[in-house]
Length: 400
Image 1 (cartoon, rainbow, N blue to C red):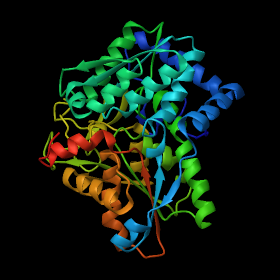
Image 2: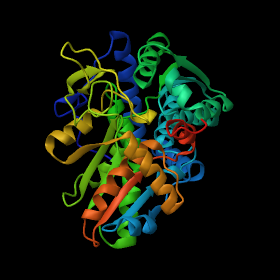
Image 3: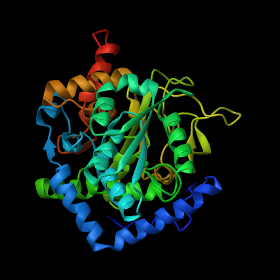
Image 4: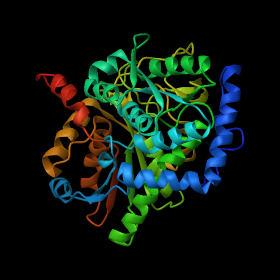
């Protein structure tokens, strides 16, 4: 687990972050932070996590030169960091295993989680099965409809999946229910939050567990090219896969970093989940001060994305700090562009990306032809698209 200068002692990344929770959660959060600090110094913990990441997850994941895609587009070389090849199909397992081991270390026999696209839920259910933990996953009923395959996978590993039918019936509402559960069961339960969101120490902790992506990618890229990429691109919902790969490259100003949000159906309220490229404002959501899609009265706006994992009205506080400092540029890609990129990567490389990852592919496909042939562009392919085949067929008018 890498060491970083931020957050500060209060959990802030500049002006964003912190810990905004009911009094009943202050003690378990302090307990979690202390347990995490011990784990970062515990050789046994780090050795066990490293062993599981290798023997169980399948790390290191490959760095793939996407030559057919690059030839089709023209311009820059394109490389893919293949997090889709992790066990369970996405980067989410890196953090899930780390936090499940922490739950064991704290003597918590039960874990809960929220999930949107289902990949975090599958990862938590998988880690719980491996380590003998009781598991409950909260998921919006709209996301359950879109991600039936992952619901089946969670239940197959012994997890209880609870549908949430309040609000927009998506990720935001699943997080609300998971927090309510945690407040009620703090003594026996650890909440495995899936992204760089929530109250301190979650944004720091999840980033650190995912930073293995960036460390591997940098070492692999240097070995393959004897250089660094000119640009690194990742999709951004809550932001864990992007934080995981960006952290290694943040100290290298010659590497441009680009986060791609969900442009959805368009710029209107409720039609997208583009926090940086819209009128989102600072606010507090799910325990952290960050950038939130909200109306003039401070009410959280609805969101939309064809990808369930990007359909969230806020973003991790460290991403806001990176954007405000100018170190990372954030842009957005619409539903149609993401679906087109879903097909493009499948047809050119034989790789079916998650719809979340397809947003990063779509933006890269637009910019690569404008770059010199000597440029190297690295995409974090955060997950695979098996889970999205039915939704793409439905959107395109085929059989779901």
